[in-house]
Length: 372
Image 1 (cartoon, rainbow, N blue to C red):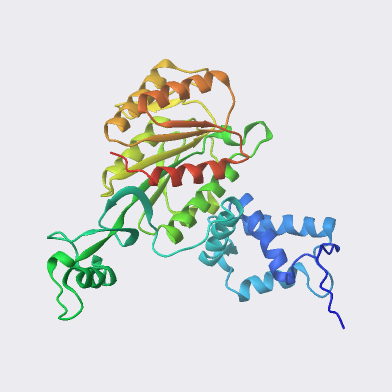
Image 2: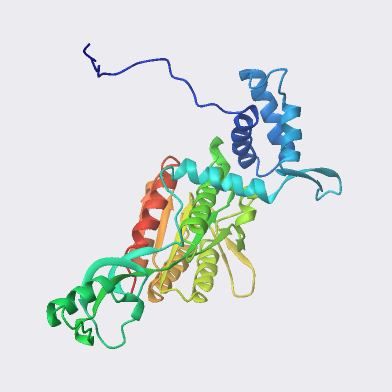
C-alpha cells in the first residue's frame, strides 16, 4: 500500500487566539486609562459605552465582574482624591502593564534580553565575544584568554610529548566595547498639544512609556530622564507618565533644554543625547528677574535666538539634540532647520503615526556609535 503525502495550503476561517473575558477587557482598559490620564472612573464610563455598542460582555461576565477582578488582582485600589473625596485609582502594577503594552504596540518585535548593552564598532574591554583572536599582551584580563586556542597553540609550538604552555602560546579573544547611553526625553505639554481636535499628548505619552520600558528591561545600564515643558520645565518620573496632562501653557523650549543639559551634566556616561517631542513654536522664556516674556504671534526673534544659543551650548557639551516635530507649518520647519544646524543634531518632521518607530530607530542608531 502506497502512502501518499500531500503538500499544499489549507485555508480556513480566521480564529482569533483565545482570550479570557478579563484579558479581553483589560487590553481595552489599559488603552482607555492612558487616554484619560489615569482617571479610573472616566475610563470605566468609556468602557461601559463601548460595551453597549460592541457587546463586549454578556450575563456570565459583566463590567462589574471585571472591576471586581481588577481589585482582586491588585490593579486598582481605593484612594483619597485631591478634593478630599474617596475614589478608585490605579496601582503601580497597572502602570507597569500600561508601559508594557505601549512597548509591545510601538516596538512590537523587541525582545527582552539580559543587561542592556549597546554594541559599538570599537573593540575594547567588554563581556561580549567578538570572535576574533590575537596574541596575549601584558595587562590583558585572564578571563579573556581562550583556553582552547591557547592549548592548540602550545601543541603546535612545543609538540605533544612533553606538554609546555608558555606566555607566547596564550591567545586572547577580543571582546566588544559596550557603550552606555544617557537620554533625556523632553515632552511639550503646551496647550497646542490638544488644539484643533487632535490629541497629540497621548501618543507622546505612549512613546515615553514604551521607551522607558525598553530601557529598563533591555538596556538597564542606560539612563532615561523625562521632563515636560510648558511655561516652565520640570522633571517627571516614569510612574507619572500615565497621568500626564496638557496645561494652559506657552512653550518654553529654552527652559526644557536648560534642564535637560543640567541633568546630563551629572551623568558619567560618555554618550548623551536629548530627544524633544514638540508640535509648536517656542513662545516663552524666563527673564533674569524671574518674569516671563511671552509672545504667541509668529516666531519672536528674541525667543528664537535664545533657543539657538541653547542648541549651540549643547553642541559644546557634545550632546546631540534630535527634534521630533509633529507639525507641518513651513515657518516652524525653517526654525527647526536652523536649530538643528546650530546643534549639529537631527530633526524629523512627522505626524503622530510612526512617531514611536522613529524614536526607537534613532535611539538604537545613536548607541551603536560612540559620540566623542
